[in-house]
Length: 348
Ligand code: HEM
Image 1 (cartoon, helix red, strand yellow):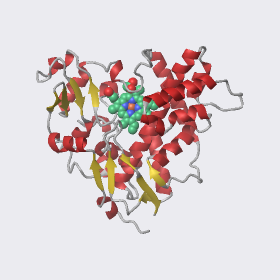
Image 2: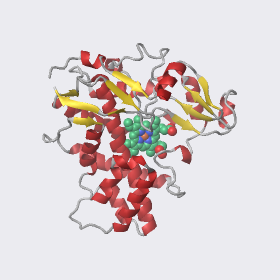
Image 3: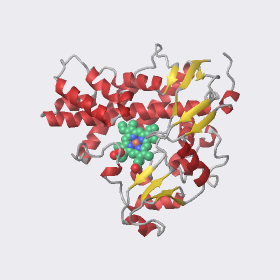
Image 4: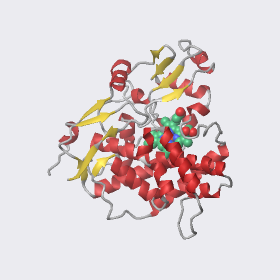
């Protein structure tokens, strides 16, 4: 089926009504009230000052918030990140597999591929923890963790376990194993969820990509227009009214990279997908560009995310996969991760 670069301009992204309203009303605004007890912030300087005012607390950390009231120590958190980094590094060492076929519905197809690539050799009780269906309810996750922990026997030494799973098997007591297994889910699942979301967004925005445009620039531009982490929450605390007196002592704050990434004061032609704008630019030095959070506390996973996402793009480009020309609408729901759902990838 012939596909031209005009197909990408024919595509329409439909945001959930609340996100659409945010974009229409507050783009270019510094601070605005969203609810009686919540203010929104999109101004570059104000965001910077608020995020510097204090470190994120336990409740604000998606990955390492407490597990059933048990705090995750800094030492545990960094050991887990080291374990998953080693797993990702091992996966990336493998050559691109000719038998991989990423045609089909994204982000699902990408998620399954990443799960097999990074955690594929794991037994079912671990693999299930990276399943997309567990997102439906936290209770399901808890049930999968409890069932997996109860079944747990150390597998024979011939079964190669990921570094992450090995941590679970090394835990001494049932409670420790359950805790470690829950953390397995917290750390392994985002590798599949966030990377598949990011690359799906990139494909939706720009496929088919012009030859010669580096994957890095495609991903940086996708992170600008459709940042999977589209808001950053800070709960009310005394540091914030001290930064700006429009913020009350009981106001939670939602900061919106989604808005600053499209602020016309910061970006030329802000709504257009133009990966070339990143040629020679350092993303860490671009005011208002916060896809991985603020300099003081940037995402711990970003060094895993980018090479995995580039690898997915390598397969897509190698195999000539493109968004089906028949699909002209992509929907983004009001959800944890900002991602275009159900993108159909076909061979050119
Ligand atoms: C497209 C992929 C990703 C994006 C866009 C992203 C974005 C972010 C952002 C915006 C923050 C700052 C949050 C804040 O200041 O409140 C953050 C923090 C963090 N990210 Fe990521 N992230 C991604 C993938 C990952 C992955 C795969 C992991 C782990 C394997 C991870 C682990 C963390 C951790 C540990 C933090 C520190 C806060 C916490 O404990 O949760 N991220 N990320």
